[in-house]
Length: 51
Image 1 (cartoon, rainbow, N blue to C red):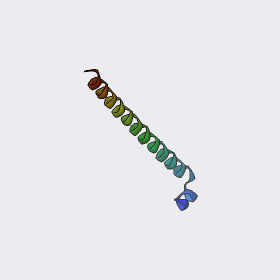
Image 2 (cartoon, helix red, strand yellow):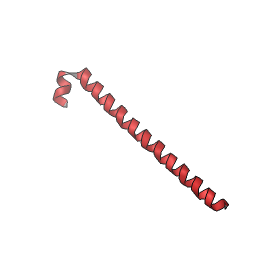
Image 3 (tube, rainbow, N blue to C red):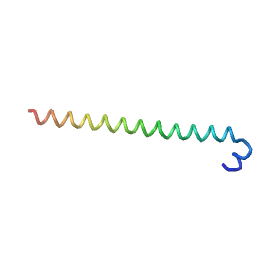
Image 4 (cartoon, rainbow, N blue to C red):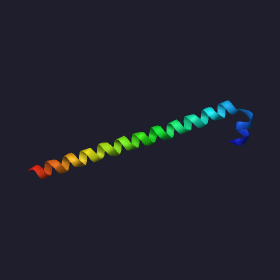
C-alpha cells in the first residue's frame, strides 16, 4: 500500500477513508442489531413476569 500511496496519494487516501467508513457502518449496524435483540429479550422477560 505504501508504494501505491507514493504513486497515487489521493486515490490511496480515498480508499482508506472508504475502508474506515465501511468499518464504522458495519460496527454501527452490529450495535443496532444487538440493541434490538436486547430489547426483544427484555420484552419477553417482562411479559413472562407479568403473568
